Amino acid sequence: MTDFSILVVDDNPTNMKLVSDVLEFDGFRIQTARDAETAQEVIRASPPALILMDIALPGMDGLTLTRLLKADEKTSHIIIVALTAFAMKGDEELARNAGCDGYITKPINTRNLSVSIAKYLDESVGNG
Ligand SMILES: [Mg+2]
Image (cartoon, rainbow, N blue to C red; front, side, top):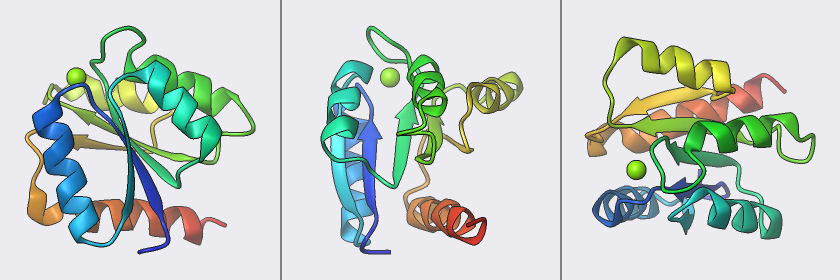
């Protein structure tokens, strides 16, 4: 999994550090952005294989950014996994309707995070 770069978009510094540390420890290359606008710049400069996308962000929210990325042929292939604190049933559907490929609920289970991410990456490779 070491060749895959992951962009973590989260405005919460504690959560950002936790997620980045865990994924880096497991060998992923990590880029970070604290808001959707910064994420757009990072994606333009160096497109990641997968984005872990916080939904609630200052300014543009994560679902809006997801819709923009999935509507653009330059970025539509990037796997987007929503990261949200709302463990509400309807939120998975909202995330999927926006174009997210998957969904991970906070608080993050640090033991499972890298395995979950690897599965999403595998699925996309398997689908060609
Ligand atoms: Mg947030």
